[in-house]
Length: 98
Image (cartoon, rainbow, N blue to C red):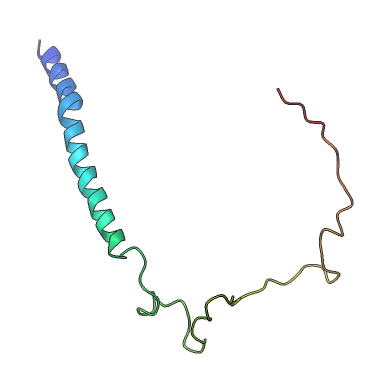
């Protein structure tokens, strides 16, 4: 009898109480994150201290609109240049749609 009552009580808690609690907790979390996103709280603004600034002191300001500034160009592996010229072909695999 005690086992049946405890099983019924657990079922009622899981079925009716737990969804309400989860809805309240997750709802407040989502509202909090939406408010933080609307206030710009996810990422600090540029220049807002050591963690927020993306540029160092010796670098110039942002480029003019429409221009692109490149910080780093990776070195090429081969001195001859383009890898597409090195590709001589490959194995052909026949494709059949099922």
